[in-house]
Length: 105
Image (cartoon, rainbow, N blue to C red; front, side, top):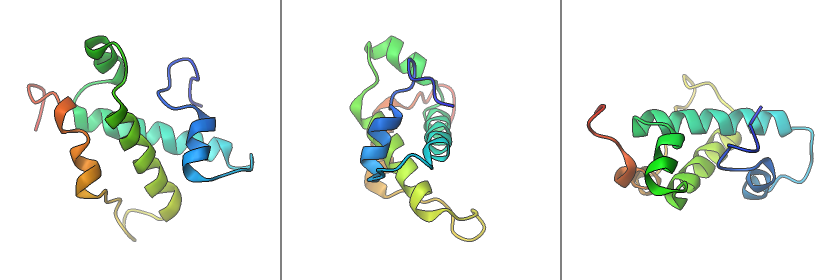
């Protein structure tokens, strides 16, 4: 599901972050990571490819945000109507420097 050549976070790294040591949820973890990446790109109003072009790499705060969002979705496993995905104010501010305000907000 995740392209290991272009994904900012490998399945192995995400499983370490989630403290998962089995393989039977690999596809699920990959799908959550892909969703977190898409959510992050939406909040930035630009793709990770654009960020990489500008900085030459994907900045650590964005990688951290994706890991935190994936962890939140993995831990909650609920429909948004039951409990919406909420990130801490600290983690939300990880994105501030990288948002392209010319495209949104």
